[in-house]
Amino acid sequence: MSVTNLHLHTSTKKAEHPIAQLVSAVRQHFTLGLSKDYQWRVNQLKRLRLMVVENQDKLASALYEDLGKGEVESWTSEIGFVISDIDHTIKHLKGWMKPRRVSTPIVAQPGKSYILPEPLGTVLIIGAWNYPFQLVVAPLIAAIAAGNHAIIKPSELSQSTSALLKMLLPKYLDDNAFAVVEGAVEETQILLAQKFDHIIYTGGEKVGKIVMRAASEHLTPVTLELGGKSPCIVDKHIDIEVTAKRIVWAKWMNAGQTCVAPDYVLADAAIAGALQEALKKAVQECYGVEPKKSKDYGRIVNKRHYERLVGYLENQNVIFGGDVDPVNRYISPTIIREPSLHSSVMQEEIFGPILPIVTYDNLADAITFVNERAKPLSLYLFTHKSDVEKKVLQQTSSGSACVNDGFMFMVNPDLPFGGVGNSGMGAYHGKTGFDTFSHLKSVMSRKFWLDVPLRYPPFNRFKFTWLKRLL
Image 1 (cartoon, one colour):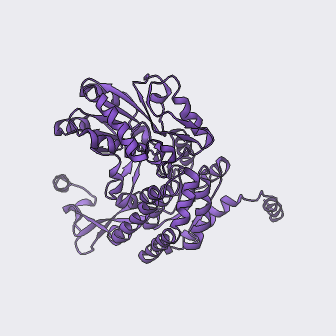
Image 2: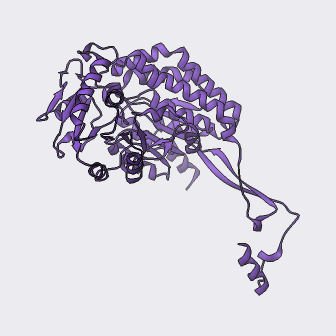
Image 3: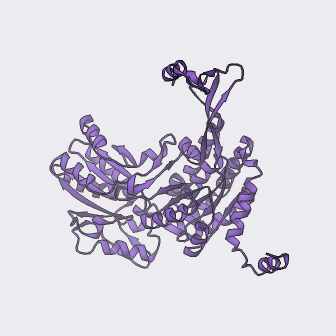
């Protein structure tokens, strides 16, 4: 090709999309190596913490506008959660970054072996609308800790929180290393067409498959947090009142729009009636006789999800709640009994304030019920009996499990959070998040002063005998 033709070719080339340019610029900045430094990472984490602390009122307002979240719930499940995560990460980061010594076999002596964490590069964080702040910032904390740059794509359904993140992040973090891209399907598709070094997506299975297919084009590793129908098994050997309160807390936080919320209850037939009444009582204690007036009870995120949830109530045995208001996208805490197992409410993840109760006669039936369905993100069990606990945990599979409570495991940063099977792949939180966004490089370093000739050709019977003993 001539120089003239080359010039004509490049001058008529279609301009690169601004999103592609942004990703390219962030990736190029990573090559400077600034984020490999411990102090750079800590400074960015401290700046992120400052952003949260200085803007917590704005964040709470955005969360209320998007989901009707009350002040306390916004703090405990999003704002305070993130601050605690940052503090834990800063406290342990220096230790996480250190080389991890492992043993060295005799055949490789003298030498040492270790695992060296290093940044992956530039990561893409695609958040979800139900916890629109926490579910982008918590992965961001892990990405920063591991020394990466990041592009953040908040959910377009939580518009107020998305816009606030877009405004705040460049003011506090290095805007050469971190950027927020707003938008919907088109913008997400453009992002997924770019080369990243890791992608983390929180959301539904359908989009999760799209993300994974796009990532495969660049051989990009993915972390997928996809949810599913998390069962709550209630044994007959329980404290009924405490059990009911904890189920209510876990189920109706954020109006049930939580990926780890109990999706349905499997109750021992011997206590199902008593549990039902205890649940009603606990709902009223938490949210009052008219939950619509409670400052602590949220709203459904948009009209589409509201109509989806209302559709689940058709032809069901609603024994509590069932009040709806389309103008305010309100659905009261609702309990249904013995729904058809073929109905939508038992076939699809509910992701809303509807709790089906299904009874079982013996524990084996409950375990079979769980195992006949896709592996859930979480499993809950309420029982006094250690043998019941052991049996359920050994004979079922789930991303996480909690005995005698709701999703309290989320407050422990030393417990990985992630799914299994259809509920997701990969995990993060705490050191697990640091490792997820790191390449754990294997290193062996040897000395020159002893060089045993056994491994070098030409080989003979003597060398072969000793090699078999040593290897």
